[in-house]
Image (cartoon, rainbow, N blue to C red; front, side, top):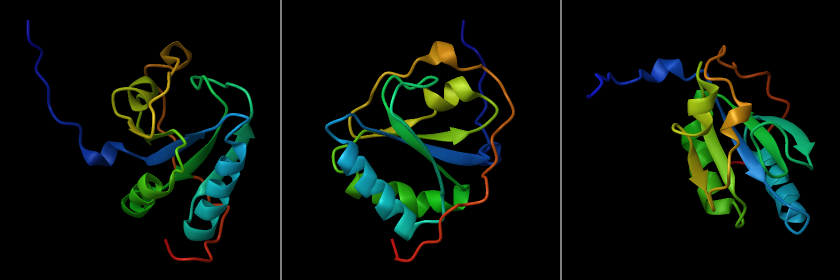
Length: 137
């Protein structure tokens, strides 16, 4: 049996997250990348999580950003991720699909614990950015 599908409209994306993963050996690289992002982009930098949290099976920090930032930030991360794994996902009303089916990976893909995510919720809107870029991307 085939199911009927229709495309998802882009307006269902409220914002994006990039989760930057690290371990003890790559924490310095993660710090450098975080500083570079803060210097160049208007984003909200999340807390350091030195242990697995939620669906993330490895230490990470989150970078929250508006839809308008995607065309500059994501290609920049592709060129400057320094071998770190980065999960980029939209924020819609479907967190499980956002972190799995709708996500893209920069670097090596890691495990996501989907059982820790709800099927549906309210979309997370971008928060007020906590950085003021001083350099151009």
